[in-house]
Image 1: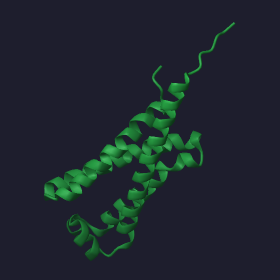
Image 2: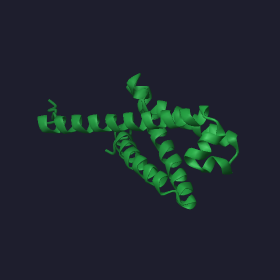
Image 3: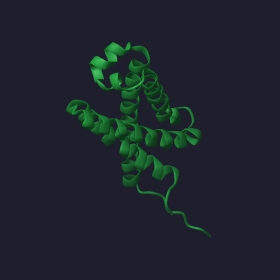
Image 4: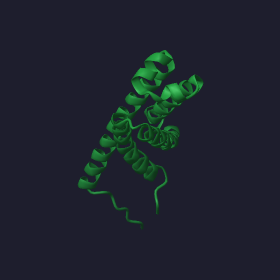
Length: 143
């Protein structure tokens, strides 16, 4: 006879709070990057240069490519809404990709001396890192 242990009510409640927090962070990150990527895909170079500065130093196709990457990765963050089994690995890949993108862009903003954009990137890193950490632990639990 096998006995099975079930999580306590408090453990289930804590897991629910964590899941709610992670979904909130995922939503915020996705909204930000869909909007930022859409702007990079649709706005003229003069507007992007006035808003961010760095687009004047790189090829315009790179700016559009970053915008496309932001939109695709943001949508991948939300794929578990469609299918948890398929979406969770995509979510982990997307969160890792967004962290890399944010780290690179924060470095660019630091080099350019753009404090406000650096702070925004830092806030985005602080919102995305827990999503990656906890969702990765769910996808690949250490046993």
